[in-house]
Image (cartoon, rainbow, N blue to C red):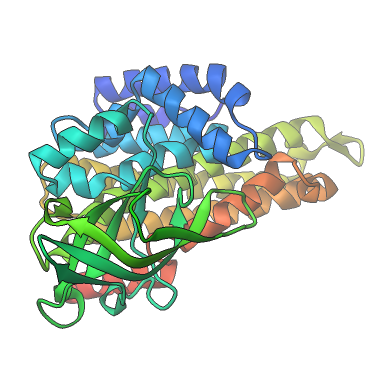
Length: 380
């Protein structure tokens, strides 16, 4: 069991502490029986359905449209500590419908979000393209007027839940202005004619990912999310929420690595004494614990700031994601080293975490991009 003393920090309220305990008990009881990296698609479907039944997905797609970011972070941290796909299944329901939650019409919300909250309908956020990832202004997929709707043409790639989602929130160039000011967001059902899964993508940590192709894919006008030309604003508002929660997922991985390292240090003997008795080991453990607390302070500071009413937390969210994901990579690397040969054995806890953490330093804005975001905020 990891150190839970952070739950007493003033960033959190009693209801958050209760939620954390509830999620911990649920995950310990259910995640091991539902998660299987040999059946990634099935695992994500099973986990989403179970989380919906347990009520956790109401935090990912809140009925009142108001995110409790501290709750999101606590849930992602807890689920990530138990299994990477548990975090993934939960987070994608929120990220994939965040634009609808924040900017969708009442009709579209009523049509889509109940199924998401119940875990019956899997969601996806389709922003990245083959030639446009961190630089959203370079998006090339177009949405051209067609009667009372638009036709989408182009590609999206590295789309989480791609190939298993029931619907996508797709960002397209509508041309109201150059660059980032000429984008709009659309709700697109997975069975829309002209939308195909061009390729399923394999990564070092198995997750459902795909490249999508849109060819004369018609979307009715009422499926637009937010105002025409406001797609960049929609995307950034969603990422403002979920970037901080990526840091929380990294915390979950890091805490699992520290737990495994403490167990190893106590049980493994070297030169006639426990590994934990060696000062070099103690130094590593101290640095791991300090890195985790530093990251947690950034994550829950960002979450508290938004929940307290800040209209934007661009700087705080970027700091939280950067610090937490980089710290988790370092903590997990130390865990691999402390485990020796066992640390690189396929399927061991350190090896699994080592593969899981790497993508978090890239998706939803790579570390280098977060540095630019932070710098621009403080210069402004």
